[in-house]
Length: 487
RNA sequence: GCUCCCGUAGUGUAGUGGCCAAUCAUGUUGGCCUUUCGAGUCAACGACCCGGGUUCAAAUCCCGGCGGGAGCACCA
Image 1 (cartoon, rainbow, N blue to C red):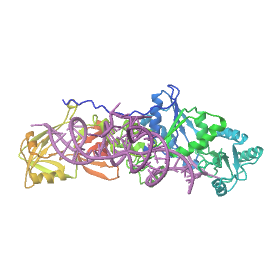
Image 2: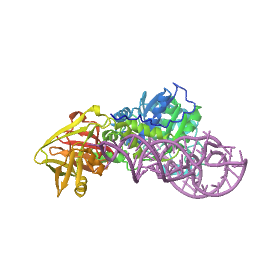
Image 3: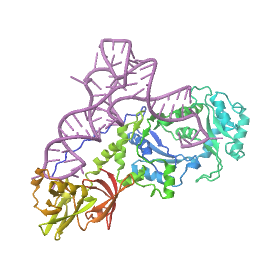
Image 4: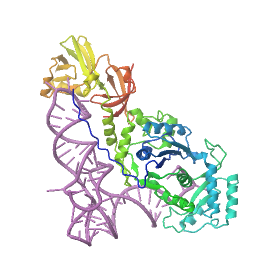
């Protein structure tokens, strides 16, 4: 038996969080429920989970459903499923659409403090005055007027775009992205999937995030760099109320090459039949990863290795596959799949026995044994192997025997492995009664061919098609259907 | 235009003034292996954005360039 040296994987350890106290860390994952989770979400979900586990803290899954236009009702169910698959432990779930009265109350307090105002300017004018560092006519109106207009907003007296609640920051702030920002808007045209038409005043992300990050007792927030300016805005709300800010950290942007992630386009594609569903293996969703045989712990290892630096990074499929390969290789049983199959007759013998290990590193798992008969015995090998063998004159059929090729015909010449010393090529093969097999590749193409008989218990498992790659078996009989994992 | 963030091999990462002619992983190339184009194993390739300054000493500190990214939404 092969003694496999224990592979010590040096996992890059995440840096410690400043001020983290064991048992008191509270962190969150805050997705918008526009669809299931994709690769891009997994980084923030996993990093937060890693830290929560390190410090025995609390992980809050906060569904940010404050924009009814971008909600897929199924996402409320799919997101927790995806998190579970990822191995992320959720201790508490918060749905923002259930907290509107709470947000309204905080808004009122801000108005009373003179730190917010209700603006009824046309959108463009308000934006322009901000650009010029000038207050709009409504900014300095008396508090009583503000409160009255706010009540009218809540009562539904204003139509969409006719009034907003604006949080005051600093109109003279050199960074235009930080000057006064909208805290609430009016939405009437799209009913909310959860609250229907009960509320028409919706908090904006910067408002609800700040309020919730405080009210839920968050101690540390890790999120993408795209929120850097949002943090600066949210800081004003914290300061107005004298709340202590969590420690905010922003990691760099990730670009994921060749990945289809955009929820809206995928959603449309599913409707039109372009994609088979959210788990279509061409997609970058968590579901598609699982369907292809990518393991959650490989994704986790990848993100831990990337760390939480502010540098923008490029996602590497190669690295993810390497992490995944380490994890699936031992468990993946070996089978033969012959793509572009070509028949090869083997004369000179009446009966052949094959004996191939289920896994070369684990002989104790047994062997795939076949008895081949026929006159001549026929097998299939892949086109490339056959044409090369024709040139060289000899071929080793793996775990079966050696064949000499003379003018296109094969003749059995024994089973002596020493033939390999002469650089004879080893080819894999399938018997003539092999099953039809199709492998769906992540790029949407298919590889068709024949596979050796695969036992029923392998269904749903990741196996290795030797010299082809790892695949996840969707079906093993009567036809074999598989999804390509990686090589 | 304004503001912010960032800049170590193809990719990711370690490195917080000397132990760095720079770590690990991935990748590529080649070798080994009586049976996979996988695994294992051995080796090679490959980087501190540029220019000044501080210092006995700089990838590491300072300044200036250059380059990349993000934000300036009644999206999240």
